Amino acid sequence: MAAISPPTRRYSAPAWSSWLRTEREFEMSGWGSGYITDIAYIPGFYQAQMQSTMALAALLSGKKARLVGRHEAYHYADIGCGLGMSALIVAAANPGWQVTGLDFNPAHVAAAREMARQTGLSNISFIEADFTNFAESTACQALPEIDTVSMHGVWSWVAPAVQDGILRLLNAKLAAGGLMHVSYNVLPAWRGALGLQRLIREAGLRHGGRSDKQARAGADIAVRLAKDEAGSKFLEGMGNVLLDRIGNLPVPYLAHEFMNRHWAPCFHLDVAERFASAKMVFVGSCQMLDNFPQLSLSEGQRAILQEFDDPGMAELIKDLCMGRSLRNDVFMRGAVPMPLAQRDAALLSMTVALSKPRAECKLEFDTIGGTASLSPSYYEPVFDRLSQGPATIEELLALPDLVGRRDNPAELIGVLMGTNQAVLVPNPGAPMDRRCTALNAASVTQRGGDIGETGIGFAVPALGGGFAIPGIAAIAVLNQQAALSDETPGLVLQRPSPPTIDRWIDQLEPAADDARRGEFMTVFRKFFDEFAPVLNDLGIPC
Image 1: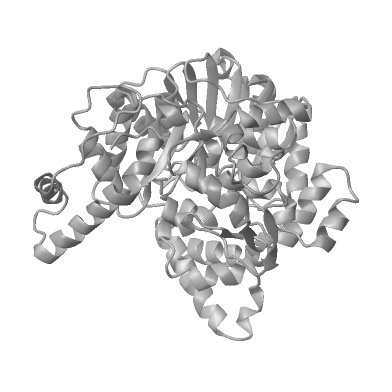
Image 2: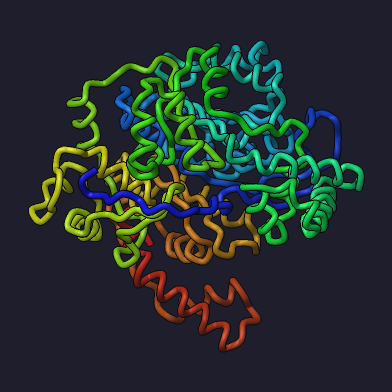
């Protein structure tokens, strides 16, 4: 990678923000087979679950894949969909697709169905599925072939019998050439937390009560024991990281992560072996930088990795050296090699757009293995061009002031996506429509007063999926789009006046004093100065 300097080695703690859960009460029962059922997930959006992300990961590894148009006939499924937010976003952004959400918790399914009904999405269905035997059910037999499937936060948290049932489902329904995303906790990174998890679970169970109360009680025991020098020997690596943060982690996160009977972090080699039974092969990672070992491994580590020609061994070496705690793998059922020239042609045709203001684009970024630096003479012209609007990879590589290799589209798109400074735009020019605005409004309403800075997934036609917008910004976007009747591509709305923003503040916090109102006004002004142009480029008029 001529445009990237090797990383300096330093430890980078895992990002917990995308794992956090919040509390909702359900009646305790035994049907969960050891999985927590009395605390539910909040609605969550994860970019790794989008078809475009999986397809890009496959292309980067030289496997035949493509971005699918939003009006094409296509079947997307979400196994363990929770409250269904990612599946709903996919359905809203892709009206030609059929989307199926599967979850074993009837409360999740009921809530997801109600959201689909409220927002008028007719191309999505939610099915209550016991995965241990769903593959043999009439409901499964009635499903059409699945083209792409995602399974986020399921595999390393459920019983072996459930995993077996999921594999039978994939073997029966995933189409030849079909893509799958699966996330799971990874060994060896989690080995230092195995004792901590068992301690929290066993102590919590003996405390009794609801799962969140059990988790807090177990965590308190762990903290007390760790304060004793002799007792703290059960901690290492991830265990120490978790214990340092345990007081700040939401209790529902602790319950889902530590109170499940069958929680079992996995070696990638073992996961790949299991999926091979469904005729599936590993093709890459949705965490794009993980597909570039030169960003995260030392020269000596890469030399050892290159002694092996099978992907499983390469991934084991990377997991050992990089300390990855969560994997977002992409598998294919029948992966077809793609000639390099065809692969590069596909990448060159892809459109990307900045996902943050130009002033926030950085040349240095953290990887799990350390810090890497981008070449200013290569990437500054790219950022400058993208600040003017979306562009194809071919256009970016043809910029006259770009200094460096122009024949490696994989590096450019992989780094832009992997550093979270750009996103794919599979449907450039597609306007925001009423399907998406209805879902986006309902998503904000579903959060109630708890919007804060947590990203809320918005359905976006141009992206063929979603984009996470911080809470206050989401309020601004919805208010701007409230009277939206024109679906003209490239539509830019008039900036709101101060009296209009004052009315928004009244809705958010009616009793706000002058100082508080001034804070809100500053936030909204900053949004329209800096972030609104980015959203307009992504096809989110505001």
